[in-house]
Length: 145
Image (cartoon, rainbow, N blue to C red; front, side):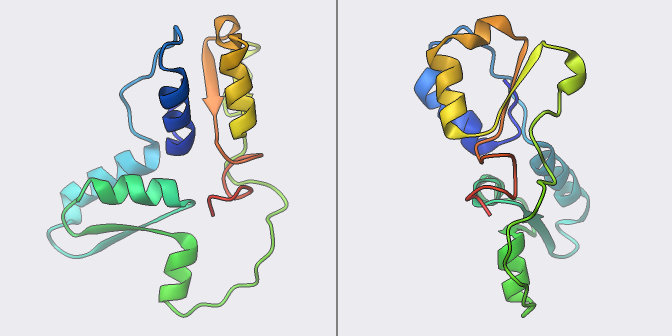
């Protein structure tokens, strides 16, 4: 199972832990990179990591990395007094289908409903990787922002 989306990974593990699938013990790349940067610079100053959603923000803050805080991009803009016009992006910067070159070995799932159906129908038996994004059509196009 693709583990880069904490909300999707949590849903799959909570609801479908008995499924015959492997959940790798890895962090999303944003969290991994932030931990690396905190190790290098956290004690020397203050590191602010912006995230696309509240789930990644919360996951990062639970790590209690020295001198490091995680905020959503929206929160960061508000803190800085920067006003932005609210409109839904036309395309997601993190769309589903990251593993498309695997030619049928990976299945993109970009909503709670698609993830639940995938497990309920045992579709995981047909794929090597399930790419799970909780928000419909990928990050920044769902309610996580």
